[in-house]
Every structure is written in C-alpha cells, then in structure tokens.
Amino acid sequence: MDADQAKKLLEQIRDSYLLEMQGKCDDIESLVLSLNNAFSENYAELYRLVHSMKGSAGTHGLAMVSAICHELEDQLAKLNDSQVVGSAEINVMLRLVDLIRRARGIALKDKADYSDAERELEAIRRESLNDLYPVLLIESSGYVRMLCQEALAKLPVELTIEEDGIQALQRLLRKRFACVIAANEVKTLNGIAVISAVRASESRNRYIKTILLTSRDQLRDGKHLNLDYVIKRNASLGDNLVQAVRDVLAGQRQSSSK
Image 1 (cartoon, rainbow, N blue to C red):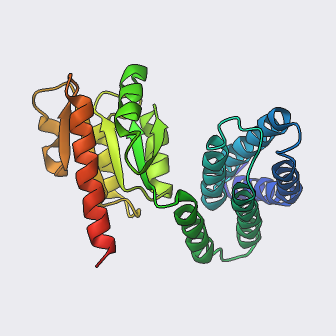
Image 2: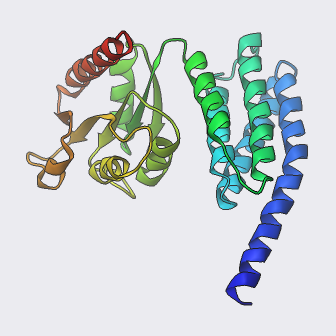
C-alpha cells in the first residue's frame, strides 16, 4: 500500500466514524436527559460514551470534538454522584452535545472552519464557571494533590488535576486556564517541559501565569521560562501556594476590569 492509498483509507475510516457519530450523539443526549432516573447506571454509561468519543475523535484528528468531549467530561465530574441533577447542569450538557453535532458537520466539509464552534465552547466554559477561575494542577503525588486541594478550597477557583504531563499539555492546548500549578517532578513530562511546550505554542495559554512546585534548590533548566512563582515542596507549601494564586487572581480581575 503506497502513501496515497494509505491516506485514502484513513479518510474513509474517518468519514465512517463521522457518520456513526450522529447516532452516538443521540445516545449521549438521551442519557443526559435520563440522569435523574437511575442516576448511577445512566451516569456510568454516559461517562463511558463521552470518554470513548473523546479518545476516538483524537485518534481521527478531530481535535475540536475531543475538546468538547473534554468539557463534557468536566461537567459530568462536577455532579459528584448527586442523585438530582439541576436543569442548569442538564442544559449545559445538552448545549455541548449540540456543539459536538455542529463540529461533526464542520468536519464533513471540504474546508473545516471551527472558529465559531471554538467561540461557543469558550462561552459555555465561562458561563458554567460561575465566576470561578479555572486552574490546572499537574502533580503525580497523591499527598501533594490533597494538600493543594485543601489549601485552595476557599479560593474562587475550579481546580482541574492531571497526574501526567502529556495529558496536562493536551488540556493546556485546548482550554483556557487562569494559571497552571506544575510540579517539576511529574511523570512523562515534568513541569518545566510542559510550561516550555506551552510557551512555544500558539495556544491561548501561551502567556499563562505559572506556579512551579519543586524540591530543588536551583532550577538551571527553567531560568529561560520567566516563571512567575517557584514554591518549595516543604511545610509552607500550602500557605505559599494560596498567596501565589491570590496574586494571580488579583491580576486577572484587574485585567478584566480595564
């Protein structure tokens, strides 16, 4: 099989996936509407379908669909095993399902322009945050993750946690965050590598505020990044982290008021 044949085969597989996606969107929508009936069963199946679609979309190069599924997963994670799901939450999830359908339609066109879909996704994110600031924590230590969560619990932040550097980088390339808290010691890609990759990208987080957590006394490999905050992993980590995040949020509020 030559390169052209391989390309055509991949395009056929992708087109077949896009055709099947309509039925999968219908299934997801039906489960969203059924969450208040047999919550545990419907929730588990809904999350499985969304997670599967996110992975398949990424495999077929449908980054926009994958990004929407990421957001839908985040919305599901907020439900916290609640047996009653409010109409506001249902409406947000239905908007995301409709946005997946729109992205599917765009992907079927010869020239795919996702700019309107990207703006809609960003609008949904802003509205669903309820004035909370999205913060990404990259940390593989369960103890440190718990410490950070407890320290930031009283701040107006929505904390997204990733243990793996590559998965964290994928989120940073798709979703806007107020700041990133990155452990220098993390699996796959360390914090400095993740921040360096984002800085070199054309993503919306290229100039994101950065807070690095480290056990090192010196960071020779991170000097070129102009890190905003470097916090030692010691007994004062929680207090220092709260102060750094407060400073970041104060700057965000000041910028938005101009």
